[in-house]
Length: 143
Image 1 (cartoon, rainbow, N blue to C red):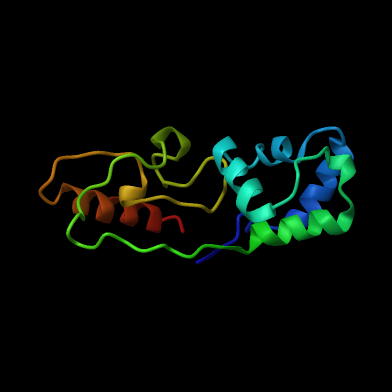
Image 2: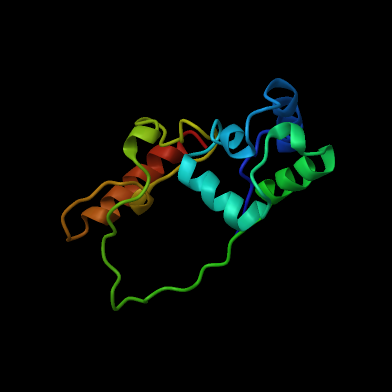
């Protein structure tokens, strides 16, 4: 799965702007204006693979490579436990982080979460299917 974490433009350009505006801010701090703190930590550890330095300590090529890694983030699912354990999941994206009308993430425009990826828990018996279909239909009106 390949994900563009900055789909509406050039993340490299944005990072270079941030470097000029906030030269003493650390990379993680700057990225946290776009993404949740835990995601930034994971991205820095596994995707960016660079030390966390002040923005002024990166050259343009380094920031471009970081941007490319985030705009072409590749994930490989590790697998599933199969239908043996498949049921309703709990946890997920906090509903406070989403538009209640469109299911779009407040912090990342054009990123939508529906169904069991959202932290909504219900009774067993088909309710999760109804929630998945209803939330998908709502989000689909705005995609």
